Image 1 (cartoon, rainbow, N blue to C red):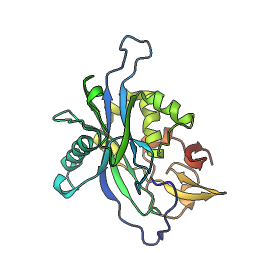
Image 2: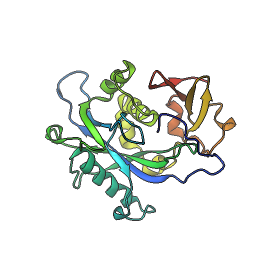
Image 3: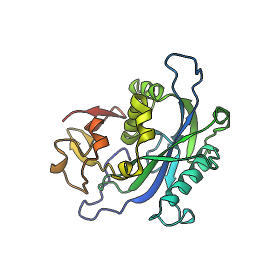
Image 4: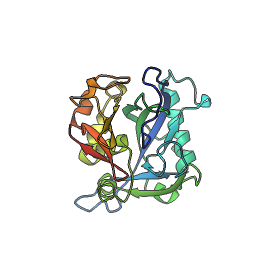
Length: 243
Protein backbone atom coordinates (compact mmCIF):
# COMPACT_ATOMS: atom_id res chain seq x y z
CA UNK A 1 0.00 0.00 0.00
CA UNK A 2 1.17 3.48 -0.71
CA UNK A 3 2.46 5.85 1.93
CA UNK A 4 -0.25 8.44 1.57
CA UNK A 5 -3.88 8.76 0.57
CA UNK A 6 -4.69 9.02 -3.11
CA UNK A 7 -6.93 11.94 -4.10
CA UNK A 8 -9.06 9.55 -6.12
CA UNK A 9 -12.77 9.91 -5.36
CA UNK A 10 -14.39 7.12 -3.34
CA UNK A 11 -17.41 7.48 -5.63
CA UNK A 12 -15.35 6.21 -8.57
CA UNK A 13 -12.87 3.66 -7.20
CA UNK A 14 -10.45 2.02 -9.57
CA UNK A 15 -10.89 -1.73 -9.96
CA UNK A 16 -8.06 -3.67 -8.27
CA UNK A 17 -5.65 -5.52 -10.54
CA UNK A 18 -4.82 -9.18 -9.76
CA UNK A 19 -1.38 -9.78 -8.23
CA UNK A 20 0.64 -12.54 -6.60
CA UNK A 21 3.15 -12.46 -3.74
CA UNK A 22 5.43 -15.25 -2.53
CA UNK A 23 6.81 -15.91 0.94
CA UNK A 24 9.93 -17.93 0.16
CA UNK A 25 10.93 -20.17 3.09
CA UNK A 26 14.43 -21.65 3.45
CA UNK A 27 15.67 -23.96 6.24
CA UNK A 28 16.93 -22.36 9.47
CA UNK A 29 20.53 -21.18 9.57
CA UNK A 30 21.08 -23.52 12.53
CA UNK A 31 18.44 -26.28 12.58
CA UNK A 32 19.73 -27.50 15.96
CA UNK A 33 19.10 -24.21 17.73
CA UNK A 34 16.20 -24.34 20.24
CA UNK A 35 14.49 -21.39 18.57
CA UNK A 36 15.26 -22.46 14.99
CA UNK A 37 12.86 -20.96 12.47
CA UNK A 38 12.75 -20.85 8.66
CA UNK A 39 14.42 -17.94 6.92
CA UNK A 40 12.39 -15.70 4.60
CA UNK A 41 13.62 -13.71 1.62
CA UNK A 42 12.50 -10.10 1.35
CA UNK A 43 13.40 -7.38 -1.14
CA UNK A 44 13.51 -3.60 -0.85
CA UNK A 45 11.45 -1.77 -3.43
CA UNK A 46 13.15 1.02 -5.34
CA UNK A 47 12.86 4.46 -3.77
CA UNK A 48 11.59 5.65 -7.19
CA UNK A 49 8.75 3.15 -7.27
CA UNK A 50 5.27 4.74 -7.39
CA UNK A 51 3.94 1.89 -5.22
CA UNK A 52 5.39 1.22 -1.74
CA UNK A 53 8.70 3.03 -2.43
CA UNK A 54 11.68 1.90 -0.33
CA UNK A 55 9.56 -0.62 1.60
CA UNK A 56 10.70 -4.14 2.41
CA UNK A 57 8.32 -6.65 0.79
CA UNK A 58 8.04 -10.25 -0.34
CA UNK A 59 8.77 -10.89 -4.04
CA UNK A 60 5.69 -10.41 -6.18
CA UNK A 61 3.76 -8.22 -8.57
CA UNK A 62 0.77 -7.95 -10.83
CA UNK A 63 -0.61 -10.72 -12.98
CA UNK A 64 0.31 -10.21 -16.65
CA UNK A 65 -1.66 -11.30 -19.71
CA UNK A 66 0.99 -13.95 -20.42
CA UNK A 67 0.15 -15.62 -17.10
CA UNK A 68 -3.37 -16.42 -18.25
CA UNK A 69 -6.92 -15.34 -17.41
CA UNK A 70 -7.31 -13.96 -13.86
CA UNK A 71 -10.37 -16.14 -13.37
CA UNK A 72 -8.13 -19.23 -13.07
CA UNK A 73 -6.16 -20.18 -9.96
CA UNK A 74 -3.27 -21.45 -12.07
CA UNK A 75 -2.82 -17.94 -13.48
CA UNK A 76 -1.93 -16.57 -10.06
CA UNK A 77 0.54 -19.40 -9.49
CA UNK A 78 2.24 -18.70 -12.82
CA UNK A 79 2.47 -15.01 -11.90
CA UNK A 80 3.90 -15.92 -8.49
CA UNK A 81 6.63 -18.08 -10.06
CA UNK A 82 7.44 -15.49 -12.74
CA UNK A 83 7.64 -12.59 -10.30
CA UNK A 84 9.87 -14.55 -7.91
CA UNK A 85 12.25 -15.30 -10.76
CA UNK A 86 12.23 -11.70 -12.00
CA UNK A 87 12.57 -9.98 -8.62
CA UNK A 88 14.64 -12.49 -6.66
CA UNK A 89 16.36 -14.69 -9.30
CA UNK A 90 14.78 -17.75 -7.67
CA UNK A 91 13.39 -20.35 -10.06
CA UNK A 92 10.64 -22.12 -8.13
CA UNK A 93 10.20 -24.65 -10.94
CA UNK A 94 7.68 -27.21 -9.73
CA UNK A 95 7.98 -26.19 -6.07
CA UNK A 96 4.48 -26.45 -4.56
CA UNK A 97 2.82 -23.14 -3.79
CA UNK A 98 0.30 -22.85 -0.97
CA UNK A 99 -2.19 -19.99 -1.24
CA UNK A 100 -2.75 -18.78 2.33
CA UNK A 101 -3.95 -15.17 2.22
CA UNK A 102 -5.58 -12.48 0.04
CA UNK A 103 -5.50 -8.69 0.46
CA UNK A 104 -7.13 -5.91 -1.56
CA UNK A 105 -5.85 -2.33 -1.63
CA UNK A 106 -8.29 0.28 -0.21
CA UNK A 107 -10.48 1.97 -2.81
CA UNK A 108 -9.16 5.44 -1.97
CA UNK A 109 -5.73 4.55 -3.35
CA UNK A 110 -4.94 5.19 -7.00
CA UNK A 111 -2.98 1.95 -7.50
CA UNK A 112 -5.05 -1.01 -6.40
CA UNK A 113 -4.34 -4.73 -6.33
CA UNK A 114 -6.07 -7.87 -5.16
CA UNK A 115 -3.07 -9.93 -4.16
CA UNK A 116 -2.86 -13.61 -3.35
CA UNK A 117 -0.10 -14.62 -0.94
CA UNK A 118 1.65 -17.96 -1.43
CA UNK A 119 4.11 -19.99 0.63
CA UNK A 120 6.99 -21.79 -1.11
CA UNK A 121 9.63 -23.92 0.64
CA UNK A 122 13.06 -24.02 -1.02
CA UNK A 123 16.38 -25.69 -0.22
CA UNK A 124 19.24 -24.11 1.71
CA UNK A 125 21.05 -23.60 -1.62
CA UNK A 126 18.53 -20.91 -2.54
CA UNK A 127 19.93 -18.65 0.19
CA UNK A 128 23.03 -18.01 -1.92
CA UNK A 129 21.08 -17.84 -5.19
CA UNK A 130 18.53 -15.16 -4.27
CA UNK A 131 19.40 -11.80 -5.81
CA UNK A 132 17.30 -8.61 -6.23
CA UNK A 133 16.80 -7.44 -9.80
CA UNK A 134 18.44 -4.02 -9.23
CA UNK A 135 15.54 -2.24 -10.91
CA UNK A 136 12.25 -2.80 -9.14
CA UNK A 137 14.10 -4.14 -6.11
CA UNK A 138 17.41 -2.72 -4.91
CA UNK A 139 18.29 -4.96 -1.99
CA UNK A 140 17.51 -8.43 -0.69
CA UNK A 141 18.03 -10.22 2.59
CA UNK A 142 17.21 -13.39 4.50
CA UNK A 143 15.98 -13.43 8.09
CA UNK A 144 13.34 -15.08 10.21
CA UNK A 145 9.88 -13.55 10.54
CA UNK A 146 10.74 -12.55 14.10
CA UNK A 147 14.00 -11.01 12.87
CA UNK A 148 12.26 -8.83 10.28
CA UNK A 149 9.71 -7.73 12.88
CA UNK A 150 12.54 -6.74 15.23
CA UNK A 151 14.07 -4.58 12.49
CA UNK A 152 10.68 -2.98 11.86
CA UNK A 153 10.03 -2.31 15.55
CA UNK A 154 13.46 -0.65 15.79
CA UNK A 155 12.58 1.61 12.86
CA UNK A 156 15.27 0.16 10.62
CA UNK A 157 12.89 -0.92 7.84
CA UNK A 158 9.53 0.19 6.47
CA UNK A 159 6.94 -2.58 6.08
CA UNK A 160 3.47 -2.24 4.50
CA UNK A 161 0.57 -3.27 6.80
CA UNK A 162 -0.26 -6.51 4.92
CA UNK A 163 3.40 -7.52 5.14
CA UNK A 164 3.46 -6.78 8.88
CA UNK A 165 0.36 -8.90 9.36
CA UNK A 166 1.80 -11.81 7.40
CA UNK A 167 5.06 -11.65 9.37
CA UNK A 168 3.13 -11.62 12.65
CA UNK A 169 1.28 -14.76 11.57
CA UNK A 170 4.47 -16.44 10.34
CA UNK A 171 6.23 -15.73 13.63
CA UNK A 172 3.25 -16.94 15.65
CA UNK A 173 2.14 -20.11 13.88
CA UNK A 174 3.58 -21.07 10.51
CA UNK A 175 1.92 -24.48 10.72
CA UNK A 176 -1.51 -22.84 10.76
CA UNK A 177 -0.72 -20.94 7.56
CA UNK A 178 0.46 -24.09 5.82
CA UNK A 179 -2.76 -25.84 6.80
CA UNK A 180 -5.04 -23.02 5.61
CA UNK A 181 -7.21 -24.09 2.68
CA UNK A 182 -7.75 -22.08 -0.52
CA UNK A 183 -11.39 -21.62 0.53
CA UNK A 184 -10.22 -20.01 3.79
CA UNK A 185 -7.66 -17.87 1.98
CA UNK A 186 -10.04 -16.68 -0.74
CA UNK A 187 -12.03 -14.17 1.36
CA UNK A 188 -10.07 -10.98 0.89
CA UNK A 189 -9.01 -8.59 3.63
CA UNK A 190 -10.05 -5.14 2.36
CA UNK A 191 -8.94 -2.24 4.57
CA UNK A 192 -10.33 1.28 4.45
CA UNK A 193 -8.46 4.56 4.86
CA UNK A 194 -9.14 7.11 7.57
CA UNK A 195 -7.61 10.48 8.44
CA UNK A 196 -6.47 10.62 12.06
CA UNK A 197 -5.07 13.90 13.43
CA UNK A 198 -2.13 14.75 11.16
CA UNK A 199 -1.67 11.28 9.73
CA UNK A 200 -3.55 8.51 7.95
CA UNK A 201 -4.84 5.19 9.25
CA UNK A 202 -5.33 1.89 7.44
CA UNK A 203 -8.37 0.31 9.11
CA UNK A 204 -8.97 -3.43 8.89
CA UNK A 205 -12.49 -4.92 8.53
CA UNK A 206 -12.71 -6.18 12.13
CA UNK A 207 -12.08 -2.68 13.54
CA UNK A 208 -15.24 -1.31 15.26
CA UNK A 209 -15.01 1.91 13.20
CA UNK A 210 -14.63 0.20 9.82
CA UNK A 211 -18.29 0.43 8.75
CA UNK A 212 -18.36 4.19 9.39
CA UNK A 213 -15.67 4.92 6.80
CA UNK A 214 -16.03 5.62 3.08
CA UNK A 215 -14.89 3.31 0.32
CA UNK A 216 -15.28 -0.27 -0.81
CA UNK A 217 -15.84 -2.69 2.04
CA UNK A 218 -15.86 -6.43 2.69
CA UNK A 219 -16.72 -8.62 5.68
CA UNK A 220 -13.87 -9.49 8.01
CA UNK A 221 -12.58 -13.02 7.32
CA UNK A 222 -12.19 -15.18 10.41
CA UNK A 223 -8.42 -15.26 9.95
CA UNK A 224 -8.26 -11.45 10.34
CA UNK A 225 -9.61 -11.44 13.88
CA UNK A 226 -6.16 -11.95 15.44
CA UNK A 227 -4.55 -9.13 13.46
CA UNK A 228 -4.11 -5.50 14.60
CA UNK A 229 -7.26 -3.42 14.13
CA UNK A 230 -5.56 -0.55 12.32
CA UNK A 231 -2.20 0.97 11.39
CA UNK A 232 -1.10 4.60 11.70
CA UNK A 233 1.65 6.23 9.65
CA UNK A 234 4.02 7.57 12.33
CA UNK A 235 7.58 8.84 11.77
CA UNK A 236 7.75 7.22 8.35
CA UNK A 237 6.59 3.80 9.54
CA UNK A 238 3.28 1.96 9.82
CA UNK A 239 2.48 1.25 13.47
CA UNK A 240 -0.37 -0.87 14.92
CA UNK A 241 -3.00 1.11 16.79
CA UNK A 242 -6.27 0.51 18.60
CA UNK A 243 -9.34 2.69 17.91
